[in-house]
Image (cartoon, rainbow, N blue to C red; front, side, top):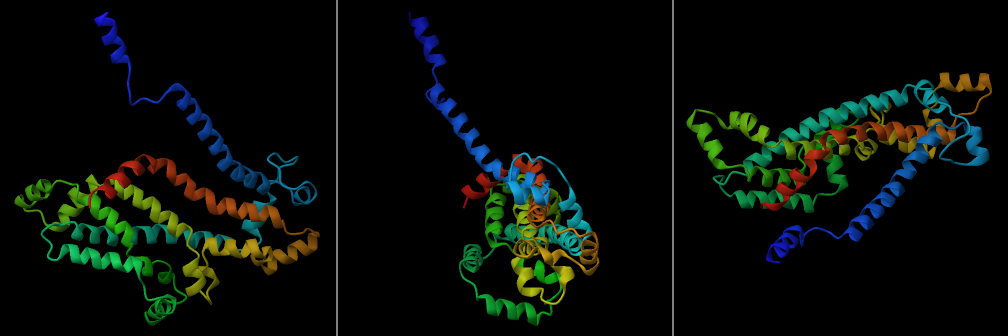
Length: 306
């Protein structure tokens, strides 16, 4: 009898969820996933639906006829979309590397206990996240630096990401100081320690920040709206998408307009909008599966230690 009680006690785990809760959890998350995925599938189907079919039947998950005319029109009617895509891609790469480098360097400095007035400096940096000078002083500073209508205006003002710096700083503080002390005894400098020891041990938080920063720069449109006024070749993809959603003719060039007049065709208004959204959304979604495994560890460890 005692042996049977030990077997039942060993099988019972008070922390494990009940079967009913597990079933409910799976069903609830499945339904929630379908709700989130359906709009994306509807958008993808609409981008492959002929314009006349959308006008007659509306949006459907499975069109009667499939066509890639909206995508062809988007990339061939004008060079604006291709230019905007290239600018956004370059901005995402350059902006992410620039912000990550300087932000992580600042976080490394603030994570050192021997830094004089470390807590006061951290508080000073944190205050800049809560208060700023406003839009007009911000614009005047960028203008005084001669960056209006230049590519630098899109990423230089966001070189330091304060919240990300604090998260990275907290993560750096979890790395044992004995590793740095051993490296210094071997003659390593602070720069060598940072690149050879700190960064390799910080892959989770670095990967997490790469995704956050890349998403932010890929979705950048506000800086382009403010600082890019006379150079249409520097318009970002999201700003162009905003213009397309409000007026589809903004993508047309003189060459594309003449071609449509000659053929008697109308621009694919609704399907082109959906195609533009798809092109602007899918590339950044491709990055997530490769870095997803770092998210939980990077954010949790970076958020716990203060």
